[in-house]
Image (cartoon, rainbow, N blue to C red; front, side, top):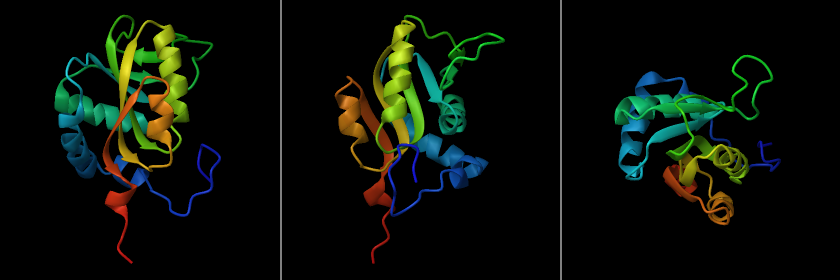
Length: 154
């Protein structure tokens, strides 16, 4: 079962690339050309997007914000830690996209904080409606890989 509540026939074990520094760096290198011109901050979504955004930030030199699913009630009590987001053009970064639900929620919250967002970037798009759902929220989904890229001919 996926975070979206859907039951999947296949599972993409994102931790296999997120926990492998060499592979993660190679994926980040492939994502660099997909970063839209004018991006000021890379915003990685908790939890999987954090490793990806950090590697991508190393490759692009762009500052990063680490976006929680909900602001904590203690400490800084911020939704986004790291780089300031208010008034800046953000690229939301995620590991795997299915429905796009968490990107849509987090983008709405970041926009409420004054961020400008019109793109999201993921490592893998499962091609299960996420791009279309995000487009309805004014977000263009970019992906390094999609389901077809990872299918084994059978």
